[in-house]
Amino acid sequence: MFMQAGSVGDAVSASFCAGHSRAACAMNRTIRMNRRTLAVFISLACLIGSADAHDDHVALFKNVTGKVQIERNGALIAAAAGTTLFVSDRLLSGSGASAGIVFKDGTLLTLGGGSDIQVRNYVFEPAQANYAFSVYLAKGSAIYSSGKIGKLSPESVKVETPTSTVGVRGTRFIIEAH
Image 1: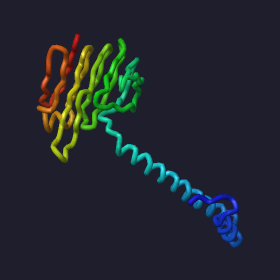
Image 2 (image 1 turned 30 degrees about the horizontal axis):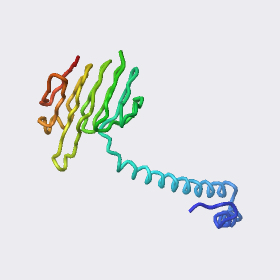
Image 3 (image 1 turned 180 degrees about the horizontal axis):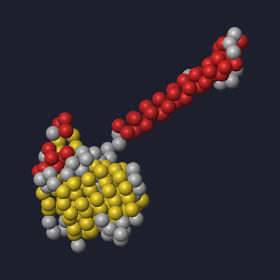
Image 4 (image 1 turned 90 degrees about the vertical axis):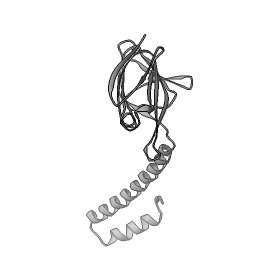
């Protein structure tokens, strides 16, 4: 509950301050203010936490150099460190650009310049032994480094290009598509 000027909180403060030093009175006000601030932060954390509970992102950009965009639901979004990725996102990197992406299972994907890659499927549910990782590299280059999905269920990992499909067996590789 937030106190306003002239409220019960001010009356309690006034009665406390009447019998104590200025320093004690100031400390009492600071403690009350910190409690209010803490209450506000806890409320915000609860709101943010509930929003994150519905956030089904699969990865995030660790770093971006140059122009890298995400095509999502027909809109282009500029990628930056911390930007999240979702299944069906298409990543477009400009000439000379690069981006490091970390998936929830620890899989690392590094995009090279002039790349066009789409996240087709991603599932990481270890409690249910449910895994899937599928990306399609239409053009450009990428470096793939296996995370937990590649170690626990290598048959669930697919990296496709217009002319091939790569099955992964817990490894690291560079792939190019022209």
